[in-house]
Length: 258
Image (cartoon, rainbow, N blue to C red; front, side, top):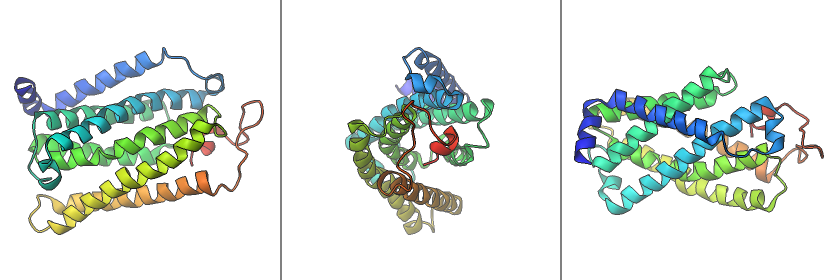
């Protein structure tokens, strides 16, 4: 592990590109899995399903990895600025590779305009994570930020169920409550903790202003998305999204905007 970490630290940029390619390989392999017929019949849904499949792999991997690191090394929570170990550094390399791959997938498939929120998010994450990898600072902060991937698992499942037209299923009903719990516990709470840490230690943190602005932009984005999530799942204005034949009245992109 020490030898691998040494290579990663010596070449963080190329290391990220390698992991990006590995996620691209995963993307190709996941295409071999069966897909619901209603998804196959729509080009946007088909792309979105493939994209979410890779995202689900990333969330399951990195969310579990981040929580495990904190359980084994609790100092991660208190020394966000400088603490890291080989496994945490490797985690940030892997995760950065995913975000590069996902941003590339969105842009190269022509979905950049409709997914600008994701691209903005990915750009901020990639910049922050690359800063951490090159300076070896804030690795612990980046790791804690990956707690949100626990919630991303239920968010991705929610969207995949919508793609499959399964909003009336018991799984969707259960998941929307689990998703609400994980959103508050792992996404909102994580953002609050990191924002508080930067505020509380702003006077001596390296490039604290940049990270504070980045966190505030992300905070605004996740609060808006939380509102949209509550409105769509618990206070819907139009409960009938799908026809009996599995088609939807509005276009796919509008349908998946909530």
